[in-house]
Image (tube, rainbow, N blue to C red; front, side):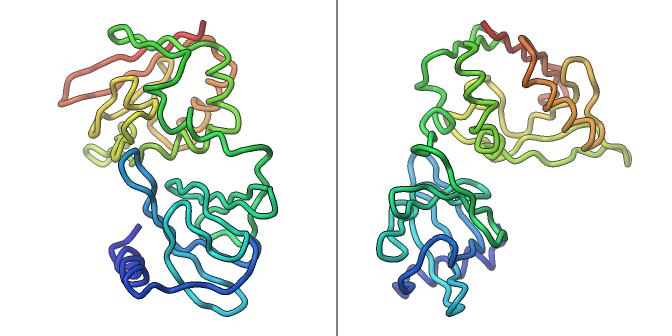
Length: 225
């Protein structure tokens, strides 16, 4: 999120702004500072009928009966009338989330059962893998920023930045600045190939990631048991 958006979030918090009654369909999410293990996130919320803008922390009510439950990098989860709704930054209409938001596994895999790291190998149980690549996949991908890495005018891969503590990237031993270059020996030197390689992982029983750290080639192997 831009420094401009962060400024308005801080200003709104200082001013103690509030919004009138409403439900998740009455709001837009203008920007977020995602939650971490040590700090609750903040969302900049606009009420569509009035045009008013205010900032709220995770766990706050934005209107009677409408609470912000979770704040991720690109989405905010609301609770309203015993249901949960997810709204992406910039979208107009929220989508209903079935059941209780399952963010504990997605947010902190370091404390989850079914995952173990041995050297450059990450062993994951099939039930946990199914959970991660199912409804939680979008939240998992939001736990690190991936930006194109270009050398001499050519895309060489995607560099990981802002890795969340306790995320699968963290548990796997990846670090900020690592450049993912191959998935299952397939180069990911354009966005389409990267998306294709990620989609193929849903049915895979193992996967190999090649990456560069400080100009040194590295490898991560994920085994599904």
